[in-house]
Length: 465
Image (tube, rainbow, N blue to C red; front, side):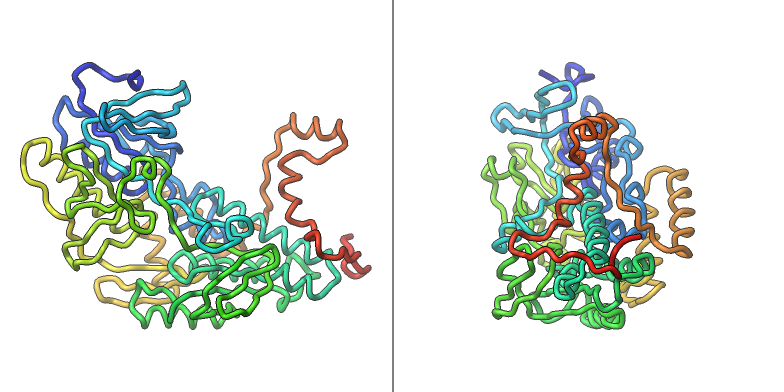
């Protein structure tokens, strides 16, 4: 079975993954590959997620649709197939995928892995059951809803110990994702609290656990210190050298034996390889596919890899490339040139990229950055960070609309809407049965006290009107 629209004689470069790396590679190959070569891009989702902005979705600084871009708007001649890859037959050079029209086999001459990384919650006992990962847009929306649920529950709780546990949010990991979500979360709670008059300021807290000597180890030390100062001024508790050894429903146990009580733990550490890669038995390190200098996994077999899922050596410094959007885009540009050279019988070149700088947000309208040796912090760094991702959006119309909405949101408080999706049929069925709809039941389940916690009736002062 071939993918719909295939023509006899076409030779496919198939890309699995529609993130920064995959879409950039497809767009460049469109211009470089001659006929009869064709680019086929396979992605389970129809959009690219700007993962570094997920923290802003958690903090309601941006709407969810602001951090995604439709893949079809980003490509021209590439054949896009929305499907889930279930298997790869390397001998027959076939990708087996579940599409909206059933299972399809897509032939490839060259196959590129560009599907990013997945959360690995098994690295700490209990994390898979009790921690919340932040990898997908759905993760960000779930965390945001959970935060609002916790604050609403505090208003109905009279036990001060339980109230403080509900209001304590722990972020595991002090890298980019951890710092960004902790900063956004603290600012979101500070802004939202005025709508919850029965919740005191000291009942809400954010703690970040970093198993290292400083925050943001990927950035220069001075920027890591600047980020720590910015977060400390807003009451965020920074625990350095703190390694989580156990996570349960009531908090985190540290390797030192100390216990931190918290009803919500957010995990930003740990990655694992895609299950398809695991079945292919490719060499991996910490969940990333090991590649040659030119990003080949098996050039003779037509396998290549780039982006977050690949461990690509950087000839500019001799170290492995970091899993950032900047390096993913640079790798895509180089790999497109290498593939064009390979099919033309010319030698490929090793990946080489000198970082132009690195940026991170530390909260709403706050950030740190180093660009071409220039170090920035505060609002200028945050504006630069947003400008970079705005420029990555496809089409001028989309850029303009998002720029207007981003500018508007700078002057108004964050949205505290708790979004949940219940279809009319579900609501009608639940009403007839006298139960809550599934979506509602899932939403309120975290509000129920743990089995070993005594239920304390709310006092008159904490009753809702």
